[in-house]
Length: 206
Image (tube, rainbow, N blue to C red; front, side, top):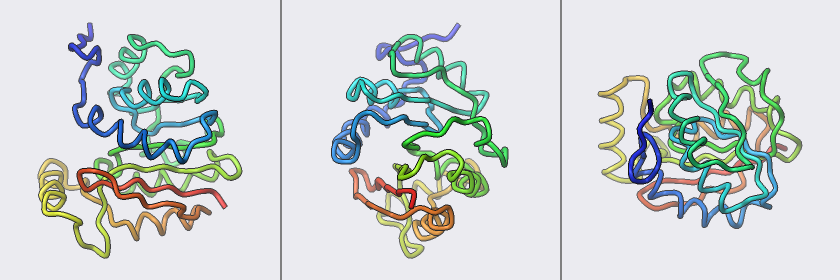
C-alpha cells in the first residue's frame, strides 16, 4: 500500500511544490493551452496534476522508469484528471525509447537532466524527431552551467553533492545540451532565468 501525506502525494517533493508556480507563470506566455504533452521523468506527478489543472485543454502523458511508476500512478489516481493519461514506462537507457510513443506537440521535463546520465541526455535528444510534431517544442527546467562555469556557489555545491551520490549525475553544460538540440533539428527560442538559479530552456522543431 502506498501512503500519501497531508499534501495527498506519496513521496511529496517540496522542490516541485516550490517551482510549479514560477514555471506556470513562464508557461503562460509559451502555451496555447491545447497541446499534447509528453512529460519525461514525471516523478511524483505533482507537475502533471498542477499544470493540467491550470490548463484543462492540455492532454498530458506522464512517464518515468519502472521503479517510479507505481508511486506515480498512485498519485495520479488520487488526483484524477480527465486530461492526464495513464503513466507509461519511458527508459532513456533504451536507445529506441521513442518507437512506442505517440507524436506530441510538446515534450516537458523538469529537474531531470542533472539526475540522469549524460548518455541518457543524448538518448533523449537523439529520438526527438520521432516524437515531436512539426513546430513541436521541448521545454527543460533545471540548473545549468554556462561556459563551463556554475551560475552560483549553491549550484556548484549541488553539483558536488550529486556526483558524490552518483558520479554519472551532475549539472550539464548549456552549450553541450544546445548542441544536442541543434543536431536534433531544434532551434533555441528562449533561455529564461528562473528562481533559485534555474533556467527554463525552450527549443522548437525547425
